[in-house]
Amino acid sequence: MKNIVILISGGGSNMAAIVRAAQRDDWRQRHGAVVRAVISNRADARGLAFAREQGIAAEVVDHKPFATREAFDDALAATIDRHAPALVVLAGFMRILTPGFVARYAGRLVNIHPSLLPAFPGLHTHQRALEAGCRFTGATVHQVTAELDHGPILDQAVVPILAGDTPEAIAARVLTQEHIVYPRAIAQLLPRLQEVHAS
Image 1 (tube, rainbow, N blue to C red):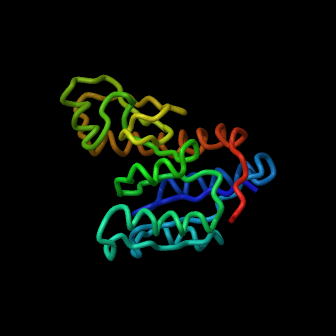
Image 2: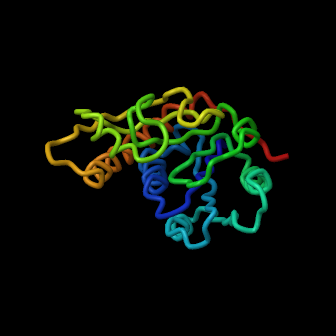
């Protein structure tokens, strides 16, 4: 079985969209894949409750007790690896990951970013798109590499910027598309992944 581990920090709406798509489209039968665990760096992340309701393992690795990013990432990786992941999915996981962590999951670590990469990597994407006078923005699913928001693009969704738009209005419109494009990109990626066996 190709196990998927999803990392969240909050409400987990993209995680929920992925879980629902996996159930609706029967990823277990079609791709030999299942969402095995949801892990958060915050014990109060609302998405953990949704995962538990779906019968998915829900775990917390709190970043606050760790003195360094490397120490946290090592503990996080140990928790992830217990679930033998074929794919690790960042879904609103609000931590910058170390190069060592990224290298550990090279080729099987994905993220979604709220812009049409390579435009506007990093933060405040919708405000920057407005300031640049863009007529379109969107969301990009990409493989994660050591360079922030620069990994190979897997899929994109385009969203128009309308007259009078605010960053908040754009964010809501983009999020709706994220819930479509992220599960789609993962489903397209699954046939290329190899099963990982717990050591």
